[in-house]
Image 1: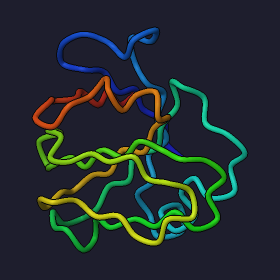
Image 2 (image 1 turned 180 degrees about the vertical axis):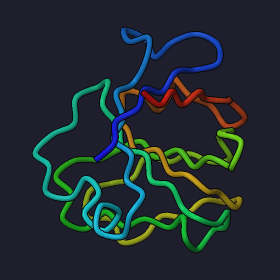
Image 3 (image 1 turned 90 degrees about the horizontal axis):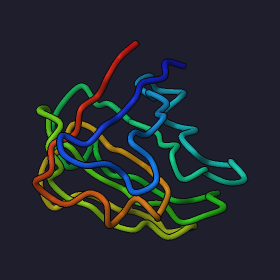
Image 4 (image 1 turned 30 degrees about the vertical axis):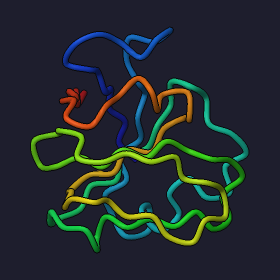
Length: 124
């Protein structure tokens, strides 16, 4: 599983300058996602990358989740097109606009990113 760093194009995430992120881009990683994790530290996140930019592939479920998360949907240019707090055991969440990437983060990050913000993904 590849790890990357995500930064805001301007500012930071409160106490953190960046997020430590797992890239989930194959079927099995995407299927498991954050399910069954006990907790998520504030500066950790998961980034799901779809092959196509659309609403259907960007839908998520929260079954078997032990905590709520902040979900940010990104377009192919890493611009946030929608965001929601997804509640544990929620059935389905999907973006209002088509997206290619889904960033799942700690709920404390929710107010730190807004629709229209651009994020920077730094691959190592």
